[in-house]
Amino acid sequence: MESSEDDERAEELSSISAIFPELVVDDNSPFTATLDLAITPNDALPVLFAADVDILTPPSSPLEAQAPKNLDFLSHLPALRLTISLHEGYPAELPPQVELKTTPAWLPEAKLRELEEAAASTWEEYGRGQAVYGYIDFLQEQAAMGFGLSSEQHPLSLPAALKPTLLEFNKQEKRRQFEEGTYDCGVCLEPKKGTACYRLERCSHVFCISCLKDFYISCITQGDVASVTCLDPDCGKETGPGRRNKPRRTLNPIELLDIPLSEDVVRRYAELKRTKKIESDPDTIFCPRAWCQAPARSAKYPPIKDLVSLTYDNENDGATQEAPPVESKVKGNEERLSVCEKCGLAFCRVCKLGWHGDLQYCNVKTDKPEDELSEEEIASLRYIRLHTSACPTCKVPAQKMYGCNHMTCFQCRTHFCYLCEAWLNPNNVYDHFNDQKNECFNRLFDLDQGDNADGRVQFVGARRFEMEAERFEEEARVAEAARRRELEAAATAIAAAQAAQGVDLFDTPQRC
Image (cartoon, rainbow, N blue to C red; front, side):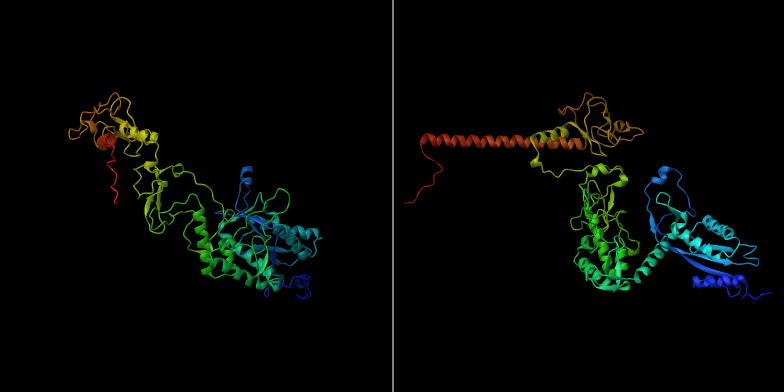
């Protein structure tokens, strides 16, 4: 029996070790070896990280395939571990036995089994001879093609739990390869090793870390976050007819940590960016307290707690637009409640008053002073005050044309009394008019021909106060008009006396 050194299997493994020095032969089994194959596809692999997905799942419809997805493109993935076992009878009678796995398990199980089965096919293609190198070469070719797993239309779907690990691995591998080179800094123009340089993620421009830190720290200290962009003056510019330059996009806070900038500086940068976003967002609601004026709490811009979890959409950093009226955005009571993130005041985003609950409707009030109203507007307001009763819930005025004094608001469907503007029980609206203690007792059909505001009907509650206030105002207007007439009459009499005597009664005597 020949020794293991003279065995054909040992000779093949020895040859493979010369080509792949990283091949590890098992000390306890001289015909078993392990090799880690780097996975670096020629084209970055599009990956979709989704919860509860553990296999490659094609889209169920063309519409799903065309739907926009948040894809990550990975140029480096964790190695494929190949374990080779050359049993007795190899290569003449048996093919090599192989086992493939990845850590973490990002390669679908079905693809692993398919690749393992290819070992026997390769052995057959090599005429049942030594086929280990041919199989390794096959795996490397498959890795360069991304194992045919995905395209942008059909990305590889993986569990969301793998995302941090795979993204970090891809990032570290890119950094390792980058550090092996030498680069010219785009600012100081000096050649420097990759360990002293940084390549920006979005545009791939390279600068030395010293220049980047000096510039970015200065910008952030001065509050100029808009300048925390690529230092290349031509970055983002596109040439050609019909093309416009894209706005320069600021760096993500996480990238600033990678450069690295200190956490305090990056936190200031993130806070300044958040403030800018909040102030430029037309949907932002600010605290109505004059001494506060802080923004209301928003799920869109949560307070910054963990810098590592920060992500920003920088496409429209400087974009602003005119906000539509607030009331057009508020569709339900639950959307009106706002809470100041600084002082904690709960207020209504529509009327800017303290929170009044879900049962109270509110309207946006005009800030136009009364003395700026036109005569038509004043007349309209006076008519509304005299000829309508307001819904106690939403304050929308309603005018009775005929019928009883049980009213139903056309806007919020509240039941109320036209005489006193009180809420009525929807289950029995007539209890209000049958209660002897109530001023509206037995007055269900007052004003059955409509509200003419002619004084024939005694209103109750707010309508009474409005009528009395109108009466007092009218009396005051009449008294003021009478006083002016008296003054005008007195001035006319004095002028007539002056004319009759030929003396100006208001002349001041001159001293000699």
